[in-house]
Amino acid sequence: MKFFIDTANLEQIKEAQDMGILDGVTTNPSLMAKEGITGTDNIMKHYVDICNIVDGDVSAEVISTDFDGMVREGEALAELHEQIVIKLPMIKDGIKACKYFSDRGIKTNVTLVFSPGQALLAAKAGATYVSPFIGRLDDISTDGLNLIAEIRHIYDNYAFETQILAASVRHTMHVIDCAKLGADVMTGPLKSITGLLNHPLTDIGLEKFLADYKKGN
Ligand code: G3P
Image (tube, rainbow, N blue to C red; front, top):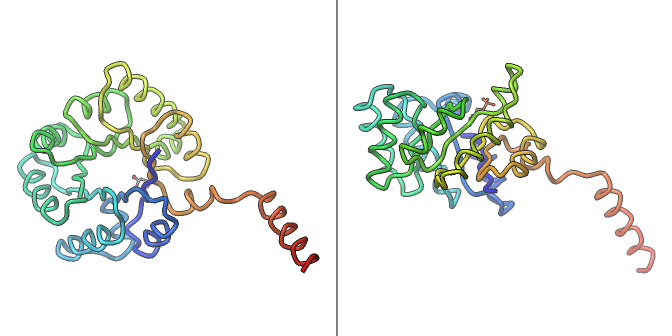
């Protein structure tokens, strides 16, 4: 399973990249605003800064909701850097734009996916990635992980190549469960990745090894 980090914070992206386990980055307008990145020029520059830190795919979201606007914005984003993936909302014009970009060999990520039917449409439109939001489903007492299982089942039935990018991952157990269910990618905050490091027996064991080494030296 690929690990993407879901943030526009350059320090956190660097920290994950330095661990050597980062495969890409996802962003959205809310994450940009959280970092105080506003205005088209600043946002475009920030995408390039992110691409210069990581080796993998970087999702950049359009804010237009009509086909022509999405194509115009997506083409400008794709020009920025070869690592840019055009992130499109799961609406009718988003699906149309997804087909437009996939026909031209430009990578896409269909976002705000909350049902298997939406994921099926994204795959039919040739999306590179589909982003089911598991945390936001959990927030409304609906099993987000079940959606990952349903999409995996459907995609495997027809050998769709669209990669399931489990998004709105909130914590380490989401990461582990996504891996069990066969998600291709997960994207979450830095703590959902670094939290995987932790086990008290590791800390206790290491402390003992170091103490025993000191005894003999
Ligand atoms: O990748 C989608 C993600 O940014 C949404 O996460 O935590 O805002 O539901 P969250």
